[in-house]
Image (cartoon, rainbow, N blue to C red; front, side, top):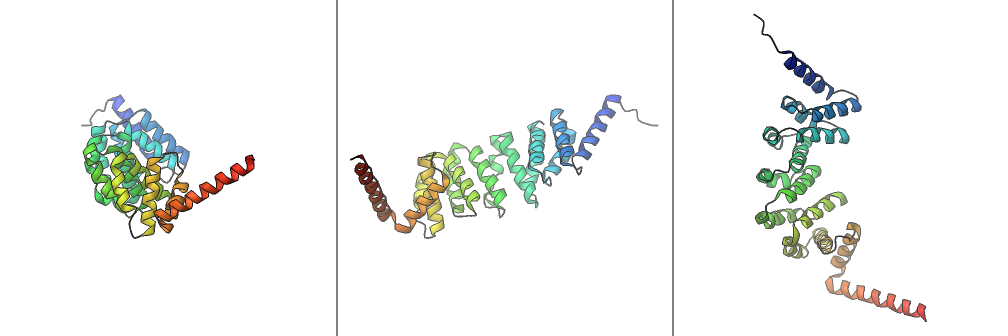
Length: 246
């Protein structure tokens, strides 16, 4: 005997099937519309399809829409599945899962961010982990997180270093003694990055490139010689100005 399925249930199932299929369509616009549809009428039945697509979606805007769609589902449904992705062998899956933790903002998920994530071999995953950790970290764990993040100073290109500096600055004054110690590191790249981060902490309006340039100068000359050189330049500028006013 055939089971009778209510019309509304059949309709919902059909709709979810169409959306799930469209999430992997060749056309970017089709995938974007599918993600929008999933978020506009959220249904936990689409959780798996959305999470799986996040792990492989090549387009930034589609990934952003997928993330939004997932945040529209109840956290108690979404978070356990996202936690599984944190251990995925797929780099993008790990990165997107971390990104979703920041979007959802449940501070209890702080405990899910491990040292391995903060040290991930993928710069993109590590950068996301740094940012999310700085957002979710409890007050009493800030010093411990700063001690961990400072180990990554000098890593990667400009973008990676800027991400780390921002995450450290977001931790507040707790980073001051940590950076002071790192500024004396024997590796000039680490020392300069530490000094540049401290400059940003003191003056957030300072551009990162300017902070790095100043930090590298201090590391190369030493604090005393760098200060003397800066004073000499300032004195020469003053004399030039005064001469021009005469």
